[in-house]
Image 1 (spheres, rainbow, N blue to C red):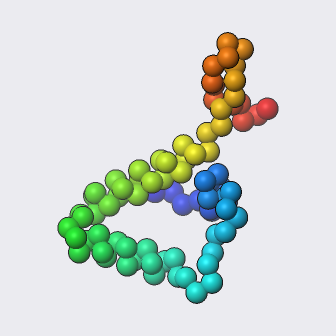
Image 2 (cartoon, helix red, strand yellow):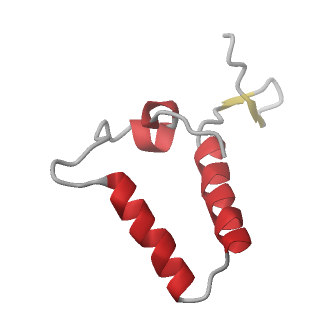
Length: 79
């Protein structure tokens, strides 16, 4: 997976809250991965889960606009 800054994703950027004092995201992630192993989720399945979450985050960046027929089209990023 490629890592992006949280500001890149519309779903996260809207909150403007990227860190919480006293929370170690890296440590929490390690604990989450370990917990998934504990309940029997293998590495390949974990990777698929992370890919799915990443897909949802990327899909959240898609913007739509009404076209000339009154239907939705993906908005042109260039204006």
